[in-house]
Length: 181
Image 1 (cartoon, helix red, strand yellow):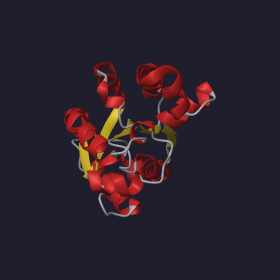
Image 2 (cartoon, rainbow, N blue to C red):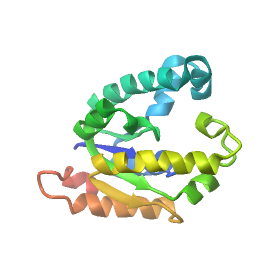
Image 3 (cartoon, rainbow, N blue to C red):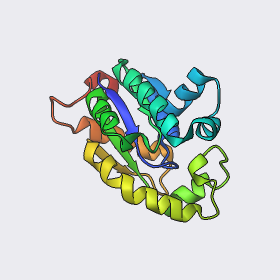
């Protein structure tokens, strides 16, 4: 079965939906941000503080390439993983890419109390999210096999919609049927 790779902005539900989807498909769930923290032994905000965004993006690239080579996973990526062309290529080659699309309003609601998001530690997080979406949305769409709206939808409903769309893929793109039953 091909890997399932979730892309989208922070607050789209990639980790929550990824865990549920992995359980349904009997695959291993991996989160690229958590993997970076495990490998480095420090938090992402600390990596940003010490190495800057560029240093973090280098670490992120290495982890994404490694995870995309592993078989049988559902991978939740960080919101900015699509910024690098070589990441987009690795993600496309690594499995079925699902873009979890959400509004800036929903992102604000879901991330407002999360201090583990370095890019939002600013007086105007709405402006930051709007600017990030303007740059990243076309990149998410560029690599997506499936686009799923997550605004105001319970995670289990989103997972059900993803499973339906996976079933409807052309035979050469379709994951193993037994896992979708």
